[in-house]
Length: 455
Image (cartoon, rainbow, N blue to C red; front, side, top):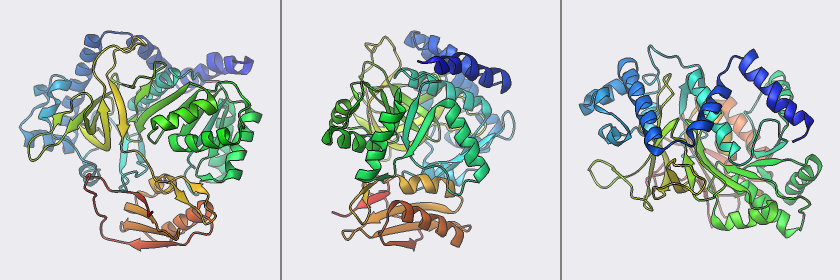
């Protein structure tokens, strides 16, 4: 790390975060850097205490969960730890959407931050959390990214999705200043023509990033371009992948393009970072100081059961520190395989996910045949959740697209104009038709297929 990097890491960032803004993020990080080496019994006890505190708060102050607990005949003190969570009902995304107002705490905490999901299941969800939860989330992220070698002050290149549409000029200026100070260079990964990919390669050569963040499949497309064109002019650059699944064959080409330090992460907008790969590259460690992550199997009318190691199941998460608008046994819509229990060769005892399934997004094509990230609409519609209840993108054999929308009462021509600007920007020359529908079908897997490409 150069002089500015050390100055930022050791002086500017702590001064801004801890002194000027009064945030305990770095205190939490120091705590997490200690707990990551504790025994499983110690970590389980910490999580159990945080869970009991959350459930008492939710029963007393969150109408949505009080009703659900009472209907199940379970009091908050009946759940002593993660092993007892099966006594509580699972909350689906549709239930969380329908109960958004009742999920906010009436006392004991406030909803300080409100967001919406990116809608990877075709159904954006509005949610919120309190500032204390935000500090935990940021500290968990810093620790997880730190396993890949990240430190504040490093030069980083973010091959990521576009930001919010129609951002004001003042806000864009503030974002630019923030990125400059943090040494973060962002490149939109939505368009991936040879010319677009060459610009990313040129940016890597010019900027010399010390770490790359990317959407998994965007990084794979870039890696294939680098390898095919023999463009690599750099030593190993660690790469942190997220938002989509990274397949074993993808990892091989990523290693060839950037070196062996490729790290997969798993998270969601609702709870942020859930699991992170360490340097052992043997599964993803669950962030158990902040979350309880279950992998469950639903069989018939009976209660869901815990999946066996190696068995595919649904991901169900409980956010231990979000008191503003809690998520308790929330079904994320993802599928995962739990790794066998045991200490990782890195020395950490956190439970691991062997793989995370169900996050593969189809790639669209523009009129010239250039690849376009299937998450393009997800990112934009995350900011339009008030107007779009669900959506689906279908690209037909002639490359035309049908965008099916389940609108809310606030959907209007202005929303449609934002969508039109999106496909004109990313899908040049492609005819797009918007269909307003009452609902969208669910596949046999139980998930809505958001992006479909006809073969």
